[in-house]
Image (cartoon, rainbow, N blue to C red; front, side):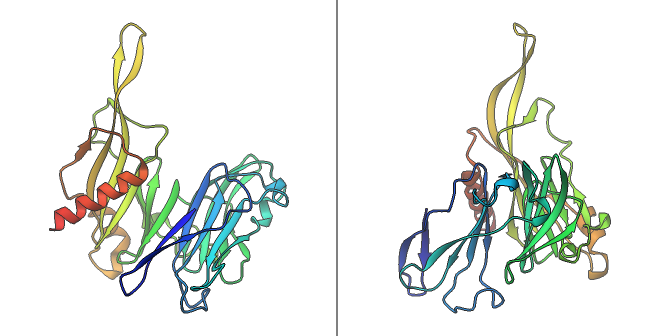
Length: 289
């Protein structure tokens, strides 16, 4: 792995990151920005935590599944890979899936589901200790990002844009229903179906503005085979704005004032997730210009 850096004088350089302690079947990366709490070195630029989306907790001692790439200043061996434990409450589970994750304050919260049960657990970055929030799951699939101007976390839930207040999770509080909203996409043609291999993503542009990227298949009925078939794959970009009316009614305003900002744009080719995010960012910059 490589890490690209830029310094104040405009110069750039590349770091080679160390190998992980073990292979990951479905790696999920969580970028943690530098804070005074967990990064005492003034030169630090943040850490990268990597967890396997498909866990085998009963083999955790011989199969590293949660690690941190920690960067410490401009000197040789500045980046180190640290093997981290899994939540102790799932140590006897044979298989488990990381359903969602989010950075909440100084903790990384994971919702994990398996045949032996479900739960949400928080990893404290400073103490490197786990705590259990509860036997419930966060309302997201994959990553949820905090949007400070709205005080909410945004992501995707069952292929739809979702917002929720996760601030109480580290205190063991389940996200309140009155501060949660899933925006149903009921305006799309019936023959446009979600791509099973690529999940949608929500890209925050700041100031309560977002671009929702959907990966879709255009379906058509095949009379010869008597079934639906995919005739085209494409990405759908939709602008969305969430506004808050007042500090005392954040949840209600966030759920009632979501609206589309721009015409829907269809990309004829089906880009990768990374390409979709780049395209979404460029579209937003062009719209502002």
